[in-house]
Amino acid sequence: MVSADNSDTGTSEYDIDLTVTLTEAPGAESRVFHLRSAAGIISPDPDAVDSNLPDAAAAVAAVEQFGEEVFFPEPRPDRICTQQYGGPQVAVVKGWFRGRKVHSQFSRTDGCEIARWKALASLLGNTGGSTGAV
Image (tube, rainbow, N blue to C red):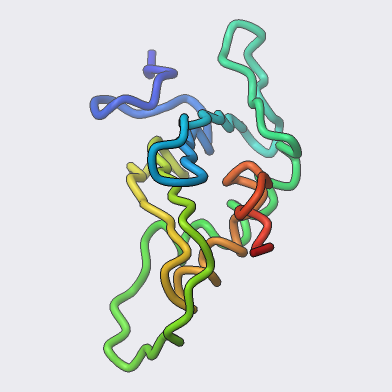
């Protein structure tokens, strides 16, 4: 049997098994969200930690659409990012995506990071800065 947790060892029985730790501002208390999905069905195991995002279905859709490029980006030396500040929010995403281990940090420190944040806003909790609003 495969482990259902998203710790550093093992894998997950879910296609998407992610834990998001969102900090809205330095020193603020972090909020923790979970997203689990197998074959597009959210948290199919009644004994599992439920997906507790405000819109888990939208989070699954966003992760399915953007996850590969956001969690496992290809190096692009020609990439230029605008120097703009979108806010102090930081989110750390850990777990599993289609059998691959995820450990990604999201911030809003420049145009490229803001674009990554907006692509997965529903995964990052759609709270405060996670929607892209300043």
